[in-house]
Image 1: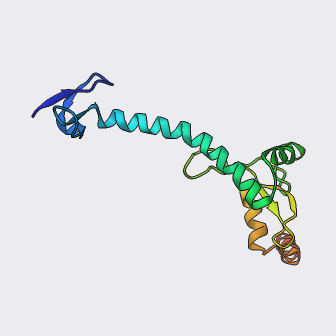
Image 2 (image 1 turned 180 degrees about the vertical axis):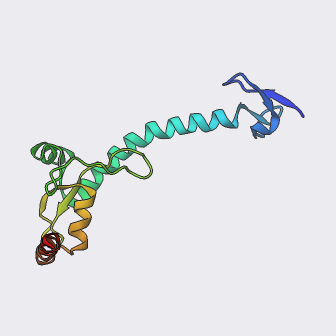
Length: 148
């Protein structure tokens, strides 16, 4: 089986470990597929962080009409804790593997910002359809069940 040495990792590998490239004499890339993947992953991680930050800033302005500075002021005011459960966010984002940001809680009718919530409390409000009566009934129900 023919082999080629990767110019990145300096390891001699079978030619099947290299991608095709028509403009090169031997028609194979100089870096093996593993090194190309590693470099691509590193680049994505670097650019994704800055892109994620830019997308977040744009989302804040578009959806909620607030700037990143206003978001950070809310965060500071709440000591980076959820306005309902008073705990820091612990949910991990699926794709980035990082802890998610506190969600901007807002009235869907008026658009008024109420505060920042962890993912679970934000879902709680959403599932209750922002209806305080449902939430009060749920609270009463839990208290009654705990009394036994």
